[in-house]
Length: 227
Image 1 (cartoon, helix red, strand yellow):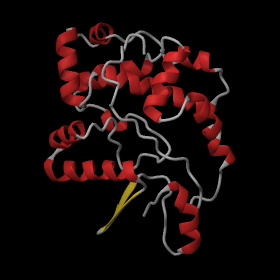
Image 2 (cartoon, helix red, strand yellow):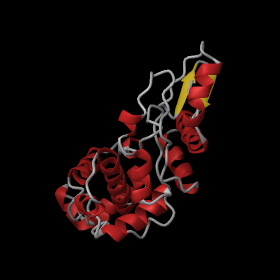
Image 3 (cartoon, rainbow, N blue to C red):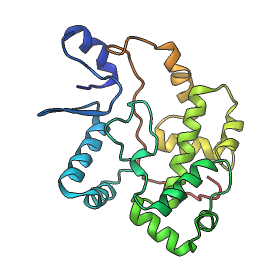
């Protein structure tokens, strides 16, 4: 089973015979399904919708709920990679790979569409249909995710991180990061920098950092050329 990162250590002490995965956001073990938190419960609900009604209905549901990231069950509680948003169509998968590989550069619709041999209009339409978000939203969350990993794993100054993640400037990164994650980049680094080294504990009882799942509110108008 899994549970919220803040409760994991106490739960393991109180119930030593129960195997707890403190990393996964939700798990199924026979008839028992557990989720690690409120947003993880949303991820679980969407997974159950997809299981019963298919990916298309699950994506429609996610858009209706204004859920930006739909994460798979094995997703770490303390990571928000874009696995849940990878498309099934090979050309859009190629576009997503291009975006992730060129995160520091200009990623306008025209640029990405050209890279995969599509017109900008058709690319934007197909991308949104297959991924459930606009190219701008995908680029925005990819930039934020890249920035978050650099904040966790390096001591690079914020200005350099902003540039390497494709943001127009440090203030743009700060504004979008705070809107999406809920804390400023500096506050995030203060809390989570090198957490894997400083909080290393046995797998059955380690305390992970929380999942801060981004949502789509306010990101639809982000320019993907400037971040």
